Length: 317
Image 1: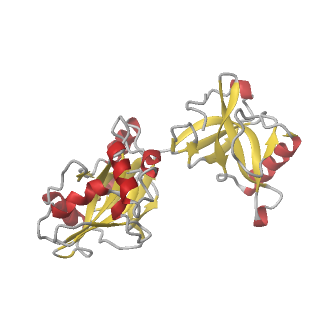
Image 2 (image 1 turned 120 degrees about the horizontal axis):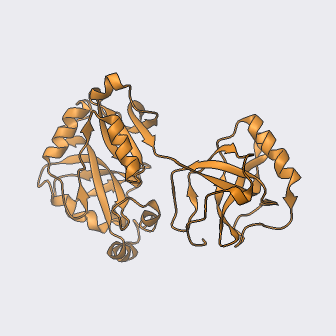
């Protein structure tokens, strides 16, 4: 079951919803047949059990009780927050057990469980509030897995807490909702915490199809130590009018010299003199300072590159 992007429920309906922390990891369905084994499948249906050997003991956690659970595999940073970049080094190793074991020793994962789809019998038509109670009663807490609490009501406070602690966001779940496998349901609403910063445009990538001849993405950077460091490509967030305006400005500033130092590993880029400042939103940064899931907000015609406040925070990619 998938969540629909949205906003907090109206205050008058707040008590009809539960709120869970939105996690930045790999979604997994966990199969516990009751024979001491465990199997994990990704959203694609791929068997990913072998990638996470530290989760094998979960197979015996419920004894002979068969269950199918829903959760998310995380890799945690030093502050205990989910770090998708750390997790990427663990993904894709389902068929490489030796490598998976070595990675597990260096970067162990943690499985958070948030729903139950089968517990001795199917639970799909059972309301969320009862499924959640049954899940919590299982007491699934271990070195590499847990069942974080959900909060009923107090949605605004829960969302504010995720922002204050630098977490990815919030998932709102209607208490009376049934579990709909494969459905992106409005009974589950996800709210992503986004940050915004000023960036300097240093290039662009041509669009394709109906966008041929126009920018499909702009390449942006931030200042550090007198250099313009590349922080990523932004390909969403414009209206057609804004894209056309930006295209004209980019053509006027065309140059053969890449303004980024070091030159980013981007194929097919058109460079421009770094005169334009824009504001972008993004979810988080990689360890090297690149923006994750950036989206264009607006052109900052009121700012010069020298007045742009944001500084590159990471190491060169």
